[in-house]
Length: 132
Image (cartoon, rainbow, N blue to C red; front, side, top):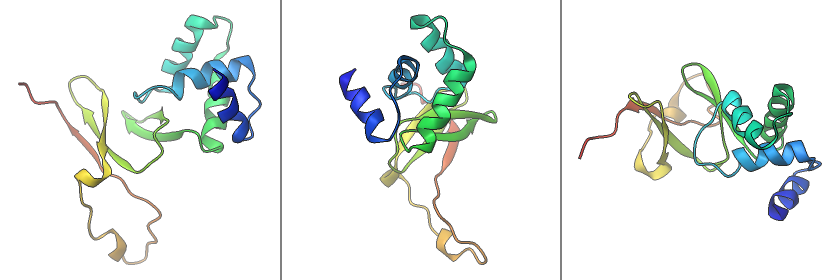
């Protein structure tokens, strides 16, 4: 917990008990939870925490560079602590989002898009895990 407190302070965030509860859930996961999923997990430990507090904390963590928010699944915003470049594969059977290493795919042509300045890119694939 002390590491989390230090990390929040390094990013200019006052580590209140509510913020720590949210950060502990979302910064230690490999999943890509939506805000309501984070709220449900935090409420198991802190039953009085409000949805607004969770949403505000998630937005603060994104704003301060500790989280990324993306629209990957069914138009819903999901959050992830993995900040380095990578791609995603959405399993159509389970809805689970898998991180795909950046080097596993090569994207070409994005620099030659006339009239656009590409700031970043990623590939979002949909499919399913092969049965073994």
